[in-house]
Length: 588
Image (cartoon, rainbow, N blue to C red; front, side, top):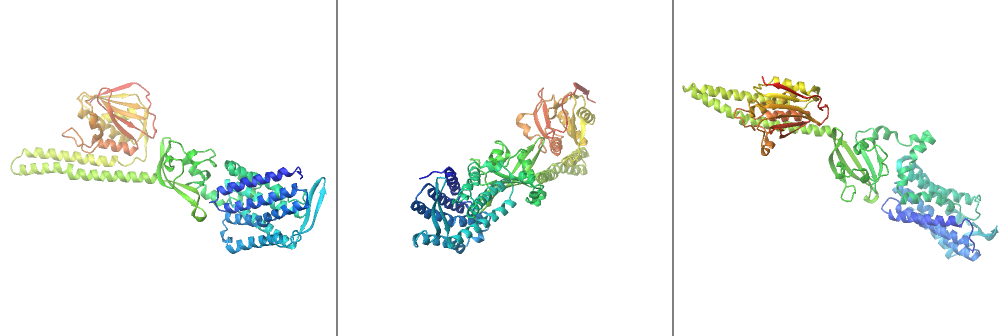
């Protein structure tokens, strides 16, 4: 036996072939995976036969292994052709008759020439042993039959390379790199074998393609077993730097449509890795760094709203959901739909996540909901609250007509209450409309102006510092006036009302008796009041003003046991930090 210096290269080829065949076997559901495995098996037969032909020195041993070797090239080109057609979506070429002809004829000829007719005369010509530099090689030519099927096999590899090249041109990102590796691997085999047949190989009587195969095959192995290689090594930028013509390879439609559309999309492969993402989706994910190649589950924050898309194992579920994404002071509502991408035989090859910003629609729905609630409240006021004083007034008018003139005073009082109710209802209707424009106002100034509009008797106003708040001036005045009246009407005549700043808003509190904890949840409800002459709409109006601004209001206990209303201005438009000490105003 002989072991030339180039033998380890053939050994490496065999190792690469086995590794790629195993990976293809694992990926059998994917389009073309089975044909890829068959291609690697035929190359494996070819490589083992070539190794054994090389290491043996006798003519009989070399011819024995040559019989084994010939089955490899008899089917390698066909397997690669059917892999490329399946992988590139040309399934119409996979007709049973086509497969039978392309495989049956060469296999039948090789089997007949080896086992039926005398070998090697049936298949080879001019078979001789040659020795060059201490290396014994088998020299031979091919009969017309084998020459024809070798030429047909090379033609099939060339057509397959064309199919892969067109797919390479149409692809981008990770797919372009992967298609480049597949294209390179096939072309290296084709070029190497062609050089050998033309007699230009530096290794006489050996197929150069088997020695060149590891150059592309190793990239395939690395990409298969460390899949992030394809994601992190992108050919797009490199090709554009080499030639501006490659800029036209990526369709312009993607640049001007997909990249610019307000709909976000994320494309995942069957392992949950991101293979494509547009800027809109990046803004939803909150990621500006490179995320192509990462698992979607790793990009999504553990406690983030997008966790609703994942199951307990971190796998993406086909679902539809609406989530709110916080963006500093604002938030957006995103409608998300996850859809599987089907491949051949109804198998999913990945997922697409579509993201639509539906914030305006949700806000419109919320406004409509509030308006419907207000309509129900108004209907309740008309049917109940106004009906009671109307019945009272009607009854006293009948008594007055009967001669009881004192009943006119009671009727007038009932009509006054009706007027108050109507005024409050109209006020609530106006204050509940969403605020479109705001003005930056001094909290100290607006608090004092509102105080001057209220009959404060012996009550006292204290402003704790000054700050600014972005609000509709007339509505903020209404809010403060109603809170002042609430404190004065339910507190002592000399009650003190304090207005001060919070880190994220302002507060109004008094030194009155306060509100029991069990009643705090109902004070903003329509008609709730402890004053016999009150309408029960004052605090409902306050809540309407707060909601119209997009704020929040909460009731707590004041520093001296009274009622404390805390208004949180969520937008953070105003700077409400304290700038000065207490300022006091006596009641008028």
